[in-house]
Image 1 (cartoon, one colour):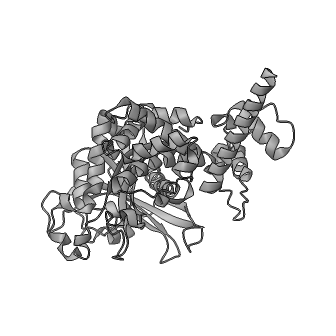
Image 2 (image 1 turned 90 degrees about the vertical axis):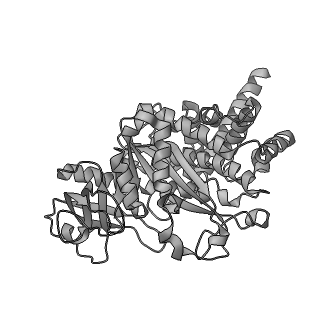
Image 3 (image 1 turned 45 degrees about the vertical axis):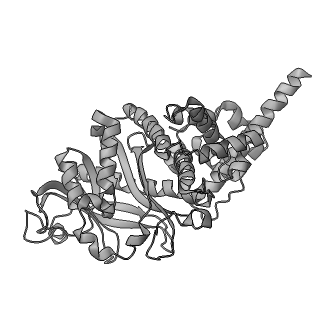
Length: 460
């Protein structure tokens, strides 16, 4: 759940960080809260004094501080929250972080097919509570750089052991989650895109009784038919209709896709070049009608799908996968601008990369509260703003006396954006990352100024 106090949030997130010295943990909390209150600004801009600035740079340069130790503290804080939920979606995805500046370029790996690209990759797992519609937090993140010497050697990919391949990241993430969550892993459903359609990964999940929803990448052979999965699914009687909101992305316009839903129990055969038993799963198909090149989802899941309501729930889960992409936007561009970091070494850079990842989650939590207009209009803005804060926001925006009853959460979301100059030019009611956080920061500044004026008035 979103925490309104940055210092308290930073303490709850990192207070148990094992950095070898309690003073380092205190510095981490202070640095994180300052950065959270000044999103998008550099270390120098976000800190208050030369002493704080120097202490922050000493922290990022300290070779005794393991970046993973910082991350583990944040994961532990998320794991502590898991006890409050009955069901959680583990939304997974991989992104690349581009760092082209010369100070770290030689320590980076290639990130694209362009051999001159430089940066690192990160595979993140974000927990989301579907019943309560809440972004909970990061439970896993692996970061790595590719070997420049191995660039262009894809021809050797098939001969490498599964655990040596980059695609092992999906299973590695599940193993890391289970290690942190223990028995609570039973509450977690991994939600992954097509890249996770790897037979070794599916076999691992099923054999370890772990739950998942994975979009299929290839039409696999199945025990139930001589036809492969996709052809077989086309012969199934459709059980329901569903309208999927296709989001705007790049040059693609937002639209509604009207789809037919089908489902069945299937047993996926192991490929001929692999060793193992067939894997019992459930299949859910969602294909757009009247559009040959339209939306087409083939979903494989461990969750029992025996009714159209079950199929609907699985598709609801998969549709939440976009939230991990939104987290990456908050991390890379909208709020924390992680790719703008300038550090003298890869390790120094990674310490800040980890801190900013957790700050990006906090920003994501705030924005998600306002994105669901229907639910946000039912909730009071006092979920995220104190009575004094929303009254100041009301007075600033409406130039009138605040009402006795607190306005809605959606009102706060829209007006925080407007406070930073946001205008709904696209008519979609969605405040961008920068404007939302800028509005939040402006309101905190107004609140601080008001409280300071009140204290001075009492002294005079």
